[in-house]
Length: 260
Image (cartoon, one colour):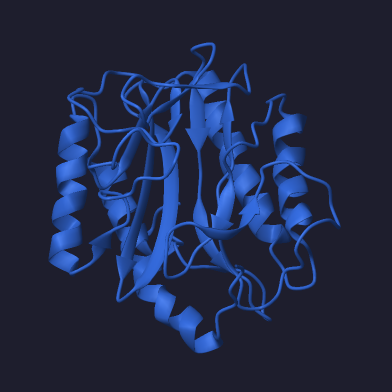
């Protein structure tokens, strides 16, 4: 069921968005060559406890997961692009890192993701990250009252196709509110003027993700982490965005912290 939020409810979601933004900004700043993925998870868990927030991931067990996730953040590295289950791995120079984090504050959820390289970056990795971020920017620009879900999907796809990347539509954006995943589904490819009409009060997690040379995924033996089928690298960008009569409101915006 698609739910529309009142202006007061959208305002009530702001603390969750701010908290998720702060956690991702902090973790991005602290994550360096040599940082262990389990350290990132412990740091996120500590920030959740200190804020009195709740994890959306630790007990999460959808049909596509082999078991409850058991951690509080997704850490996808190199050829992993989604649902990366943290494990005992120290980051190496040039690793492409995607952090995906969702949490609940006072019963409201926000969801966001960021990709970056630790140490020396490859040009092709920076290009992939840039395309993914610009696709998210385009999606947010299309998230206006009176448009449709297909307009968001088409905006994402236009950026990806222009830069030569394929698109997988198995996983994409989604509604967010009292729970992390709700209706409607927002594919990363689609046709304009199609799909559910965007109305004020609709809150969406928009999340383009692309792989360098394929659009096919395989599941890691850990039962969660999604990898590119050909070993090429992936990047992921995500914000929680509310449709309002004044335009899109990015609830997980990190710019107030002086970061992108």
